[in-house]
Image (tube, rainbow, N blue to C red):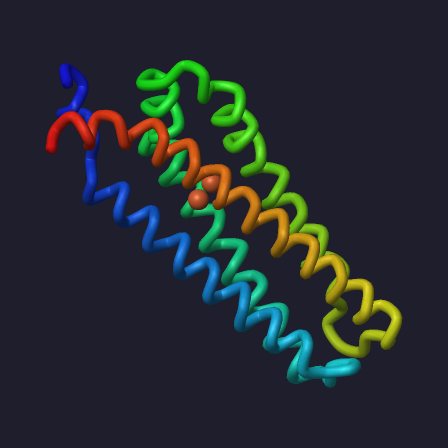
Length: 153
Ligand SMILES: [Fe+2]
Ligand SMILES: [Fe+2]
């Protein structure tokens, strides 16, 4: 209970809301990619714009999570979470690098059917990585915080 005042449920709720946003952005981007066998220039521009937007959103999201100290707080509450929590935080730069790699491989105009198929495949892999990351993150934060929240009830 001593550290209960360090929990900020408003910020925590904000982060969880961002996870829902991220999920929606990825699903719509995936749908946009699935749509076309090989995109024309306009579609390619749209995909690039949305992917860049997702990248920026993610960068800010990660920054907020790191600044918010939820992982550290969870570790302080339940030390056995520390290994998973450190892995979760180490995902952040890896995920940004993965999305940068995708952006680099999207040409300004024409893209071959093979290159497009590879980009779609890699985007699906990236989506899986990001969803797994958020799942692990939820698990750490929930486990770390539930105890105190339960005590407070
Ligand atoms: Fe995260
Ligand atoms: Fe997150």
